[in-house]
Image 1: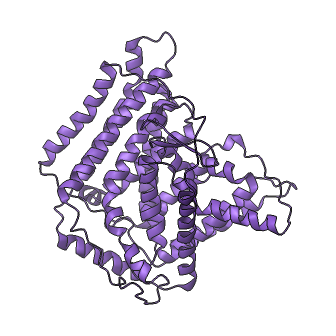
Image 2 (image 1 turned 135 degrees about the vertical axis):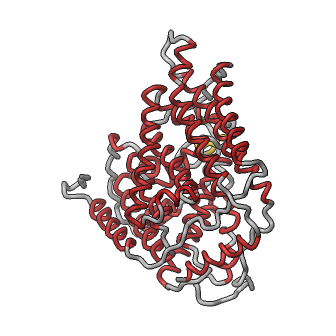
Image 3 (image 1 turned 180 degrees about the vertical axis):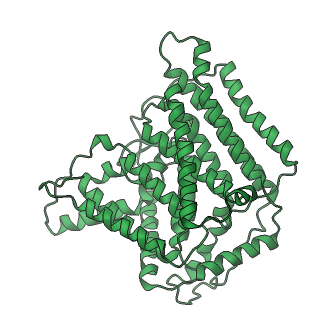
Length: 474
C-alpha cells in the first residue's frame, strides 16, 4: 500500500480502484473496433517454404557470424552534454499533444459516432504505433508530445499563479523500479488486442488514465513517475535506445550519437527486459492470431478465452526472456531483444499507420462529429492503392531480419563487455546460445506469420475499410 504524508491511505489507491472500475465498465461496452483491421499483409513472390527457409537461415547465420568473428565494440561515452531542440519544435509538439488529448476528451463528452472519431486514431494509430516508430528511428518526440506532462505543468503554473503552496512529493520507492510500467503495458496490450475498444470506451480510459497519471505525478513528482511508472514514456524511451538522437536529461536536452549505440549502455533492468519481451510477444500474438492455423486451433474463444490466450502467450515469451537473463545477463538480453521489438513493430504495423492514419483527413472536416464538412474531406475514402505491395513486403522482411541482425550484434557485444574476466572464448560463446535460440525462434515465427498472407487487391482493402468503418459507427 502507498501511504500519504499524513499516514492515511494515498489518494493513488482510490484512483487505482476507480480505474479498475472503468475497466469493468469497458467489459460490457457495446462497441468493438478491431485495432488492426487495416494492417494488411502482402504475399511473397517466393513459395512460403523457400521464403521461410531462406529467412530462417539468414537470422541463424547472423548469430554464427557475430559469434565466430567475435564482433566487439566499446561502450559509448556517457551522455554528458546536449542541447534543447528549437523552441518551435518543443512547443509545437507540446501543442500537438495537448490538442490531441483535448480533442479526444471533447469528442467523448459531446458523444456521437462517425468516421471522424479520434480516440482510437490518436491512441493506437498515431500514439502506440506512430510515436513508437519515431522514438526508435529518430528520437524522443514523446518528451514533448506527452499531454500528461503538459497538463501537469499547466496545473503547477496555475497553482503557483494563485499563490497556493505546493506539497512536497514523496520519494518514489526504489523497489518498485519500472514494474508499474510493465503492469500498465499488459493492460494496454489487453485493451488493444483483446477488448478492442471503441471510441466511447477509449474515451473513458483516456480520461481515467489521465487522472491516475496526474495523481501519481503529484505523489512522486513528474519526472520520477515518467521515468519509472508511466507506461508510454518508459516504452518509448526504451525504443529510443536505438535512435540517433538520445535524451540526455528530463529537461529535454538531446545529443546525437551512433544509431543503436544506446544498446551498449549498461542501464537495463529486469523490468526493462520484461517490458521489451511484452512488446515482442504482443506484436507476435497480434500477427499469429490473424492466421488461419490459429483460427483452426483456437476458433473464436470470446473475451475470457482470448484474454487467457494473450496472457499465456505473453507469459511464455517473458519466461523465455527471463530464463535467458540467467545465462547471459540482463543487459545482453535487453540489447538482443529490443531491436527485434522495433523491427516487428515496423513490419506488422506500417500499413496500419499508413492506411488507417488517413482518417485524420475525415476528422479535421468534422472535428466534433456533428456532420460538418469544413474542408470538404468529410467523405474522404481511405485508400491503399498508392502503396506498392512489393515494397511493403520488402520493408516487412527487411525490418524483421534487420532488427534480428542488429539484436544479434547488440546482444553479443554487451555479453562480451559484461563477461567475467578470465572467461574463455568458447565459454563466452556457449553462454550466448540460449539468447541466440530464443531470438531465432521468435524471428522465424514472426516471419512465418507474415508469410501466411493472401494476395491483397484494392477491392479487398476497400471491403476491409468499409467493414471497419461500419463497425466503428455502431
